[in-house]
Image 1 (cartoon, rainbow, N blue to C red):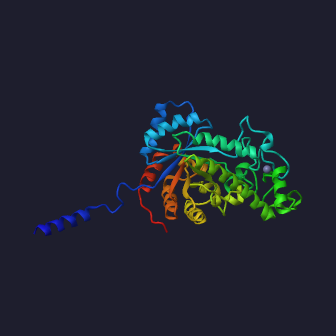
Image 2 (image 1 turned 90 degrees about the horizontal axis):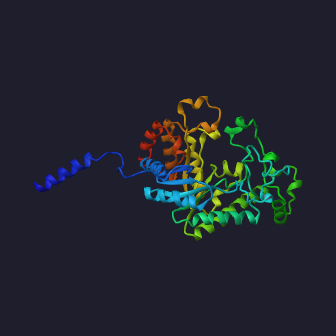
Image 3 (image 1 turned 180 degrees about the horizontal axis):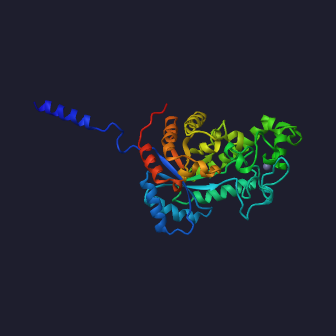
Length: 373
Ligand SMILES: [Zn+2]
């Protein structure tokens, strides 16, 4: 009789269990956040606490290049229980310590130093110069030395867009149906000389450099080399290193910004799977996640970067893709697609753009356990 009661209790207990996964399961979530501006410690604490309560596990924090800033903000992130990665642009630099000859040169011989493409802040360095590497190694190294910093997050670790994302053509009034010399970098003497030495090809006299496969590979390799050298510096300090990258790598990143990121010695990549920039549906986020996970083949983790629409009711009326992004009702599709295709987690651009409706959809979607296809 006693045994029967125990069995009955067990059956009742089992049947009462919720069908969903236990409360403890959650998709790992990161967020790109900038600051601190004039915020007080109290204000930052409140901001970070809110993010933590929304299920965010770690920050990619953009706060300039001063290690002291990251020490101060990192201390608050740690106290709140957030992982803390410093989000600092790599090849895009405008500081006064930069030398003019470090800047990338396009196919028409123009430098990003005084003639940047697309927008006036697009001052990209050339990865071939040893001084560029030394500057970056020193800057990232000093930030990685801060005890509160868990990792270095590279961004703009690439060449300028030789082709703009399809969704941006109208904004800039351009038709980028092929590579044009004014957007094609780097034709500085160092790069073209090194390429000549390596391959025997004088790229400056080529009829159509975009058809020279070795020239493309040479530039993928320049970025890969500098990433891997920086990874060594950061890893030797016992810190993680990861990067925001374009989607792909093969379908987009290599073709438009020359990032062969599946070859990079990083702990994780954060592809900016911003479907609206490529005039793609939320389902595409899953497809391109699969491409990235397959390419990495276990070499690094992949966190799927999601671009949030800040003003959902006005999305259709907005021409600028910067104001597009995932609607609340699209968020689940993007999160599910990412996780079912092998992402380790997701990253939000940015939590500040999330509406109440976004948070409600997000809250549910990140507490679902997805099966990898
Ligand atoms: Zn160069």
